[in-house]
Structure formats: C-alpha cells, structure tokens
Length: 111
Length: 116
Figure 1 (cartoon, rainbow over the protein chains, first blue to last red):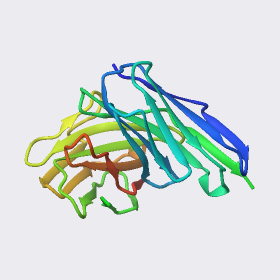
Figure 2 (figure 1 turned 180 degrees about the vertical axis):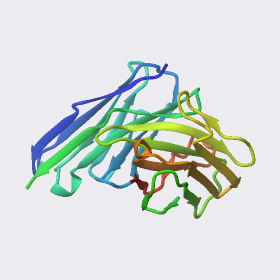
Figure 3 (figure 1 turned 135 degrees about the vertical axis):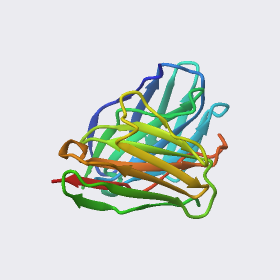
C-alpha cells in the first residue's frame, strides 16, 4: 500500500529565505508526482507535475525534483514571500490509478 | 489551463436532509472524477472514483448509500450526501482527470458542508 509522508509538518521562515519541503513515498512504481498548494478553506492549486521519467521541473521560484528509486521528492522555494504561506501537499499517482496524498507541510513566511 | 468548477462553495443543512455538490470540468473532458474529503488540519482522503457512464468505485469504509455519486457526462459529476448528520460536516473536494498520465489532476475549489 502506497504511503506518502511529508517532512516537516510545519515550517516557519523569515521572508527572503530559500527553503526545501520533503516528500517520501513507499512504492516507487509511480507514473507521476504532483505538488499542490492549498490556502485555508480553499481547494488545491497545482504547482508542478513531474513524470516518472523526469528528474525535475521548474516554475518561477519553484523547483521540484524526483528520485523515484529512493522514493523521494523535494520542493525548493527560492526567495520566499509572505504570499507563499499555505499548506503544500505532494501526491503520487501509480498503478492503483489513484492519487495518493502526503500529510502536508504548513508553511508560514514571516514578513 | 484546465479549470474545474465546484458548487456550492459553502452549504449549511439540517440533519436528515440531503445535499448535492456539483463538479464540472469547464474546458476539458474528464474521463475520471474523484471525490475527496478533508478533515481540519488533515490531508485529503479519497472517497470514490467515478468514470463517465459507470458506477462509482468507493474506497473501503465509505458508505455508497450515504454518498451517492453520479457521473452522467464527461464534464459533470455530482456527490449527494443523503440523510446528512453532523458527523458528515467536512470539506469535500472534487478532482477531474483527462486520463492522460502526462497531465495532472485539476481540483475544484471545495465545498464546506455544515450539518446542524
């Protein structure tokens, strides 16, 4: 059974810092991995999608990497801003044809 | 980009009544739609998977008679919470997928259900 874990559960940083969020999954047989952002009481916004054959994806200040063999992904946020404050979720899609979510990281960027 | 519209965003209903939540893919056809439930400060829990024109597949522990899912077209899926009780109060989110692994999932904005 696929299990997805995110570390840390919560993170508080001052504005301007670079930071890394971690995601690990137990079954490496995945088709893709997706990072989402969720603001309080809102739905999910897709940030980056990495296919199993890819090593990383970049969008603006965000960079996501994938090491499928070790079951790990990281989301790097450069020059963090207060507007980046949200919960970040990673999710993997695999042979079960289901999108399995991680436990989430609550990020607070202090101005 | 792909857009999924979910309505209503917020609903309050009396215990014992039924509530219907709609999920529409606005600019693409969704072969599969997913319904998730989220408790406060927790991650998303998959409730069921629905494919257009066929019966939904429910996850273990989810009552299919309480949570009725209909996927009548490639752009519309509905979740009906029947005979709602206060413990059904939660945040429900739908997701739509084209069926292509090269394209990710698109989520609706969620529905906050409060049963009083």
